[in-house]
Structures are given as C-alpha cells and as structure tokens.
Length: 557
View 1: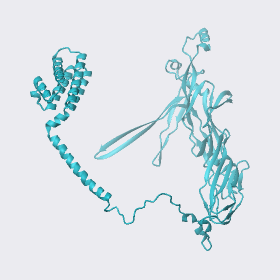
View 2: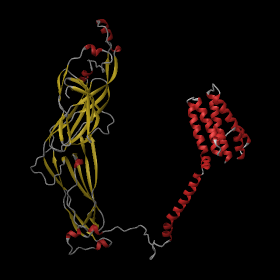
View 3: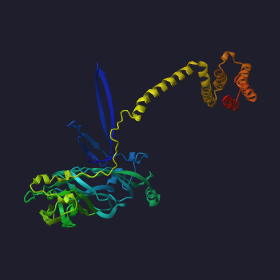
View 4: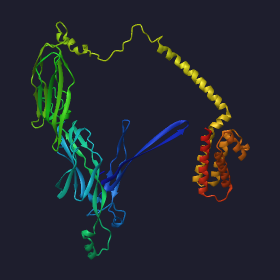
C-alpha cells in the first residue's frame, strides 16, 4: 500500500448466517480483513486488489482509488485531532525522521549461497521499544537468526540521502535460498515509541513566537510510530551443471573434510569409532548423510550427528560431525573405501571433491561363539543380515508354575466365581432394608427434620440480609414449628406450647433446654407481629433459632 502507513491491521472478523427454505439449509460465512491507514503524502493512489485462494481457486478483490489532499491548518491545530507532531509538522512528516530499511548484502546469489538480510532502523528523534508487528516472511529460504542471543542492538551513525541518522540493527538473518529464480522477501510491519515535540496554538505575534520558541517552553510526548520495511527482491542463480559430481548433495560455501578412526587392529565383536567432520562456512546445517560403503561383515549403527554452529555478524559457520559405531563380526582383513564429499566453492566458482583416506581393518579371532562363525560356501547376501540372528539374553525373573497346576478348579477360581453371587445377595438385602425405611413416613420425616429446618434457616438468613422482616420471621417460625412436627410426628394443627413441652419431656430433653426453646418460639411470635422491629432484633431471633435446634439435636442423640 504505497503512500500509506499501516496503523493497524489486518484485523480479522467473521460472521455467518443460515437460511432454511423448503427444508433446504444454506449457510454463508463472511470473513473481513480491515486495515487502518494514514496517508503520508498528497496525490492519487490506488490500492491494488487483494488475492485469496479458496479450495484451489484464486479470487481477487476490486482495486481502490484514493485521492489524498492537503489537510487544513485549522484541523491540524485543534486539540485532540493530532496523533503527535515532530519538529517538522504532523505525523506523516515523521517518515523522514524515523523509518526502517531491509538491506541484503547480495541480491543475486547462487542456489544455496548464504546471504545476510539486515533490518536497519534509522532515526533522528528519541525512540524506544522497536517491535515487529508482522515478522518478515522468508518463503523459499532456510534462515538463521543472527541476533537471537543478542541482548542489545548494534548501533552506529550512517549518512542516507544526504542526511545523517542514528542506525540500530533490530533484525539480522542469514538466509540460504532453496530454489532458483526470483524470490521476494515480503514487507514487514513494525512499530516504535517516539518522543515528538508538541506546541500549542499561540497568537501570531513575532515577539511572542520568538520568545515561546525557546526549548524551555516546548513540550514532548510519546507516540506510537508505525514503520513499514521495504520488500527485497532476490534473484537466485542456478548452480552450473557442467562437471557436477554425482554425489553432490547441495553443499555451497567453503569447507574442509576430515576423517579419523580410533583403531585399525582389533578382535571380532569389538567396536570401532569412525568419525567424519565437515567444517567451514556456508549452508553447513543442510549437509546430509555421507555416502559410505561398509563391508557386509560389519554391523553398523546409525551415525551420531552433532553440530557446532557459530553465528556471528558475518553469517553462519562451524562444523558438523558424523560418528559411526562399527562392530566387525568375523576375523579377516577388511577395507573401508575412501568417502567423497563434494561442494560448490563460491570463491573459485567450481565444484570441489575432497576424498577421505582408505582404512584397512585387521580383525583377529575374538572370544565367544561369534568369533568361531565361518562363511565358506555361504552366499554373500546372507552375510549382510547377520544381525538378525542375534538375540539379547533375557535377565528378568521367570514366572514359573508347578507342572499340572491350572487356574480352573483352584481356590482363586471359586472365590472369583462366587463373589458376584454374594455381592448380589448383599445388594438385594440392603435395598429391601432401605425401601422398608422409606415406606415408614414418620421415620423419614424424623431423619430429615434437621435438614429441612436448616434449609429454612438458610432461606431466613437471605431475607435477613435483604431486611425483609415479614418473610424472615415467617421462615424462622416455620423452621422451629416444622422441626418439632417432623421430629416427633405431631401434626402442625396439634402443636402448642403445652404439646411441645410434653413431647420434649418424653424424649428426656433437659428442662432448661425446653424452657429456652419455648422462649425462642415466644420471642419469634412476638417479634413477628410487633411493629418496628430493627435488624438487631432479627439477628437475635436468627441466632437463638440456630442455637436451640442444634442443642436439642445433640441431646436427642
């Protein structure tokens, strides 16, 4: 979107709708991608169509033409309408004070050649907290972040377009192209915080303007500044096909190839360590396994691959090591043929092939049965699969049982066989006992009396908080009378102070507790119909009710 600064976006939203017509269901989904732009300069601009691929089909939106005109001075000077001003004017003028550039050290590399792309932040005002909102995309490249472990930015001064700027390298990548042709590194979005000078409107008086232009009277504020890094086009050249080695696997750079072996004389079934190291500068991490041919009498394990990669300002260098563990299984004299490593030398612009030494291995007779194996008259192809005849010795304890003993007819068999029947009988007996209890309505009411009373008291507590006097005393009264009715199977219509006393005396409840319960009932009934009761009286009734129910319950136990 040339000519505009992206302040926000893309902001994605989604909406969907479903229509049912004559039993047919139709569903539509709409995705919206919204950008907030700020015009940086006057002129006529056209935002090109956007493209989207849906199920393999490409679609384009319509282009949008925008005409940017000069803003009025009055609107720029109104408070609250400016996003922040630099020393030279409005937000759009900051593009000459703060901007970001993507710079590649090479724009026409060879396939697999290392290039370095640096994102430089140029600034002439005080800034802080640079951050990428949209990370650079490197489709077609294998990348390494050169600033990954850096705690601070590399900074220096640089002259650009005749102006001197402070420069901070906020991102730096080593890229290795994986395909030839033109590859474009897309533009990236970033933001930073900048301090800009803010001046209020004053009378256009030459004397006062000169006086208030003194830096002492200037005010600064911090604003968020959007930044757009330019796209970079890279033209990747194909590697020459002339004189290309057959074993070339794509290594490009400047390399050394070193090999070593820990022993060349040993007994059968002893181990050899054979090591190959590729060292140098280039796409070393992309070096694949080496083309090695081992004798069929050798048991060879997959190589242990280790990398020692150095990342610096100059790019990626280091070494990659392939370590093979080899075990000769028979005696004799064997040869490990030279191993080749081919790469394209960028300095001399041609292919190089480095050859490792040839190793002769003398294997004497080893100890154990494996050393006595001979292969005279055996097809050589069978020897290659010798490892499949070796089985590991089992060291775990064996679960042995006496001969003639079986699970069927054993004690455990009869226990497991009868257990479900016994459990079923216990289940039926328990269910019958529980159903009998539930059929006894008086007993069930007695068992649930305390729970019902507590439930009503909780409900009364809610009315207490709401200061609902009538509902509160109604619930407390029903909780106390209902508790007695359920606990002693006395109908509510037959309850009175006398029947309460008689019922509690029969249950051998303490005389003091009986008097307290009756006093609580009297207090509740009086407070229920007395006018103007306050919150303290309601609290007192609630606490007495809770206390007396708990006290009676404890004595009945």
